[in-house]
Length: 378
Image (cartoon, rainbow, N blue to C red; front, top):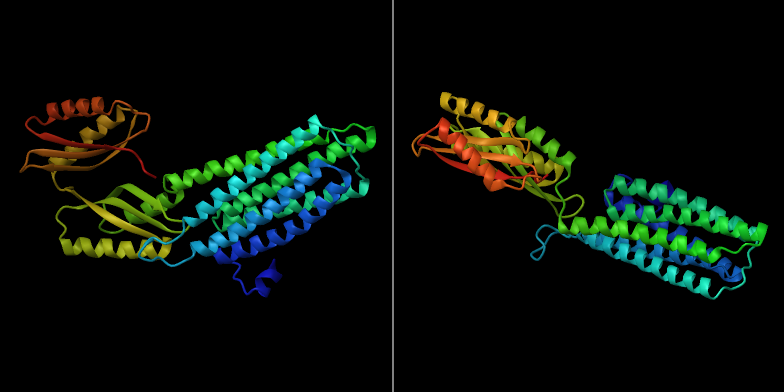
């Protein structure tokens, strides 16, 4: 791999270059293996070996699409796509998963046809040895590709690597069925083809499921959210933070929003300085475009401190309430503000709202309650 990086002047630490180099290695390796397997499979009349060769050719296409998709995803934002083209990688993963599924279905059809209309099997120990070497190469290539895919945060590349490892497992099945024929004259080649086909379809389905999840939108990455919360809550002038939303526009492009609690006596100028510096830091260090909402908090008010203590008691008594924030008392309007983070398992939101309203009404008669219920987004 070092030779590939040097030959094509690629940076081994740059995401796009990692994907390009790994895809190139996969394309070359699979072309060689696919050609050998198809030739051997046709000479031996082995549907299992031919199926493996065809699947290797599909791997060539998958690696090529991964490379092209990464290049397209790296295009600069424009008027039509102001957040860039990063999500093209998800479309590439979708195409790859469909190709894997289709190749598995076609192999299954061929294997079933061979079960119905059996053909004589002509296999040699030499051919079997070549398949064994191929299996070892595919397994090593798969492990390496998955490792590089995780390093580059490329689901498409990880999918190609997983498929490559599945190919090596399929080769073990092919070798086993061929040995049974060579040693005992038992031909289970067609049935081995069925097993291989199902392994391939399983890999395609899992990649398809993960990719559709990315396209539809998942919660923001938990580790990233935890790190951002740590930075925001640790910033001088910020009392706390909640309600973070992270939206993914590609594996390394994010936009987000979060509400921060600030001292209600802060001026607009003081708030601007704190949030602007925080926004620039998050952009430069984490490539997240963050927008801030502001909650006013009155820590000097004895009534407000007492209210927070009573709300904490209520929260502790309800298992489906994860936390609370944005507590504020407006004496001028005789209004109390509060937000609850609730679990998805909570179904009776209206019941909780009415119970809390009655609870606050007993403690603070004459005050209206403005309660917001929401779930975690990250």
